[in-house]
Length: 384
Image 1 (spheres, rainbow, N blue to C red):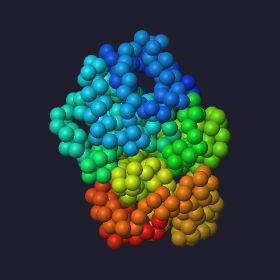
Image 2: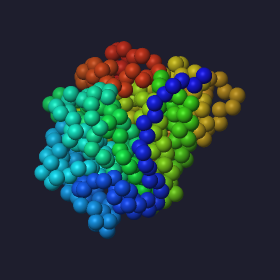
Image 3: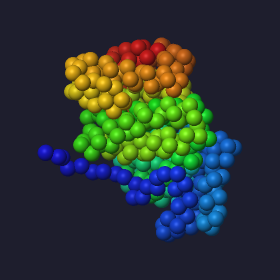
Image 4: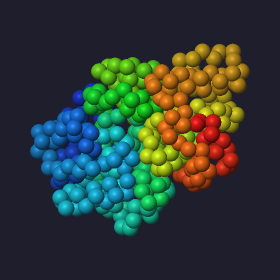
């Protein structure tokens, strides 16, 4: 019997090549006056943000630009953005970028309508008021922040990535135009693509999975596995970019409503302590944690293997699990992800501290197997 569930999905999603040109009329329906455009300096330098600003200009939509967002956005970034919003009289947010501008934009929108310190809202549904309206224009096929109720902000003082899961942060309009993703370099395409694959696999295996999220996540695994290599090797491949954009969006719809697990819990600590790219951390950890969870997910990894294009007919559960894990490892290697955390500068003396923080992370309860501190440390060591 299907259980009663809540599903949080953006009220409107624009998908496909050229869809960013449709935002003008949709924004005018929102009864808003002026946008704070939240983006980063790199996107301004390579001209991606300007493509969106041109659409706003042509639609006579007023805006101010805030571009001081770090790759792992910090509390300071959020408060600087909130100040820019207030000083410019903005009443909604347009976020342009990957997960960093998207997450920063969500935090700014939340603080504009909720009192107190951002740290007060770490955890699940801690706010009382809906954030300002957000038009979330995604430029990477990875985090799916434009589709989810999740956002992650680094607390610089504690060196911790705060996970905030809040239905009040959901975007009003989510935009995934693969034409905005074609200027991204190989390394970023690979890292964000493996981030999306991690969302799909981890969401498929999590305790909170349902028939609907399983269907979305399996389709996401298929699309990402069949297109990521082409997207990495040929940045102008619009078909591959389109499949990646679609695949990362539908897993965002899924994991926003079923949760994740300790791949993310552990990756958050690597980002908080070492300021490492989130997608790379996920990619390195993913096969180790899938192996750790394998005996607790029934025969689900057989379906993961099939979705990744592997043949598993007639294999035992254990052998099918091995095929799935090897397929993950091969895809990661093929797109150039480092083989271990040591190559990223991670030190063994920090593992115990990170294990404590991972256990307290908001994603940990969703893991299909309940870990203890020693098990987390062991996984980190295996991933070195």
